[in-house]
Image 1: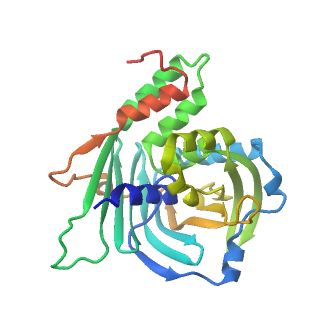
Image 2: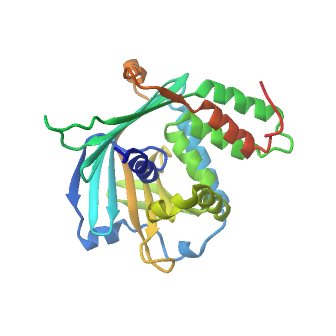
Length: 328
């Protein structure tokens, strides 16, 4: 089965930070008026290109609060729309102190089913990606393909602290964002967005019983160019799935990122931004007891677990312009 790399890349792009869900089902595309309701960019925002200090500070405060939480427990719903085709999936997210968290989801695309699990016990982050047939039978001959990876988040943290000690003349902020991405969880999603986007505006909105502060972000041109150049020939395959902008809905009272909407210009550069992927957290429970067993991982037998720790450390060092030095 040669679908694993392609579908895995698609799931990562759609999830933008691995926030997707477990137990997926296909749905018909919603009516035109429901799509119009989900368009979140205002006309004035479309003219903005530079970071707004207020928006940047809001995202950083929200990320810091996530690290300070005693726990987060939530259900998740994701809606993905490509033209007239749409599907929806659901799953769970949980986190606890000490960089522990668990994310799991399942999604079906055509005749394939992809399942994803991330579990971190505070020391090692384990990731399992599995691609198989959506419907299996006795006649099926293809076993699901499984990819396992791990990274030592404490080693990544120690390296980040070492970079701080020699931070004079280094791009410290960017290096620390890479470290947060390596640690995983919701803080990693915000760190990844902060590293890739310019947050150009923040606006309040009260609708459907929610009182939110909405941060609007667009691609940082240098980041986009660097990302696309690193993809080589694969950029043609994924460009159609890449969002052009992101709206993050923060609960005004708690600054929890309850919804993230990835937007795309569907008709070229002059097209109106429309939702490509919407990730929404529901039944959010903050700072309540959570079961420790959620953060225990048991690897399936017979599959090698790739260690990604060194690649994240190298990315940190490159971001900090410290590739010519060595920290132990």
